[in-house]
Image 1 (spheres, rainbow, N blue to C red):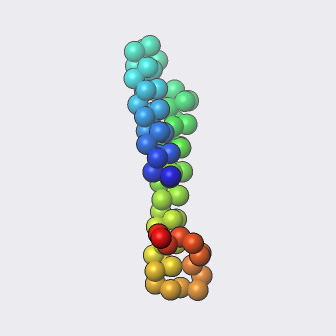
Image 2 (image 1 turned 90 degrees about the vertical axis):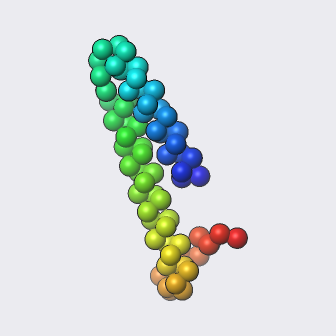
Length: 69
């Protein structure tokens, strides 16, 4: 689900970037919003990966329910 959102942000960034260059304005605020969305998605993937690794190790501080079924 996180990866799907990141793909959508990347597509939106590409569309906005192309539209900006066609219009002659370059990347604008909407493009940087898309980049920020990609960054938040990357952070989410990193947190989820770290929690899954902790659950596999059996750490007591790991969240429950992050293991694939």
